[in-house]
Length: 361
Image (tube, rainbow, N blue to C red):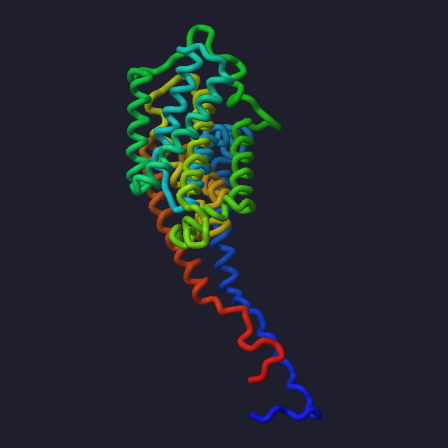
């Protein structure tokens, strides 16, 4: 090939490829997928407020909903942590029951100071989470089966501690400082709602801004690839279960402060709503992956829906029907959102120009 003569002008650089622009329909679909659940929450609140103007849109009702849904919200946020790493912790309901009963046992029967009892229970929850993670990672047992087994063991311990009966405080009741953990109010609202907001903020920071959260997402997407790039997936899976254990330990302490008795079967009713919130939350805000803000929005939808149908006079069996149907819907939507995100990544055109500037064709 003959080189160009010095007098010939250089070839003009090829213009850079324009960045691909998504069509309006794609952007609208993304907005609906990300914020549709939040819009549904607002629509449900408006609809129930119009149907029940005297009772639903009141401060007393809002306070009651926030108070009753705080512990399910915390459990849902706790379940989100292992889900981000591609695992499931089915022991959270059993762990909640054990933590709740253990708190009452240490304060009422053993006579421990309530701050020490709460601290021991929370650390015990983290230890249980470490056991869950160790069984999943080193015994190579699927997280569904492993945590179901450890949960059954915790339920057995709960029955052994209580003898199958409730733990009832003496005539002097529980310490006022302990019950104030749940009964206090802040800015006119139950303080438990602010616990949920604080946990949401902490989990958002962990998953969205810290390397630990990014490692969880990488492991949840492809654990083998995470190992190949130097991320010790086993260690971080255990960390995710420790986080879940910490959360159900805290929730157990708050449940004891709320109920003020030790009920050995209390935790079982919280398992299904927690997973409904965590799975449905993976379809909102950041569709296709578990995230703290999405879980909070999902819990809000469930709370508003349950409160509304309850005030409309629904029968007792409507609540489990609502939770079960929503769980099926949440699993289906979560799977669809994940597949949609993967398909978009595969079909998205490359932003790298075919010909670097200054190259000739």
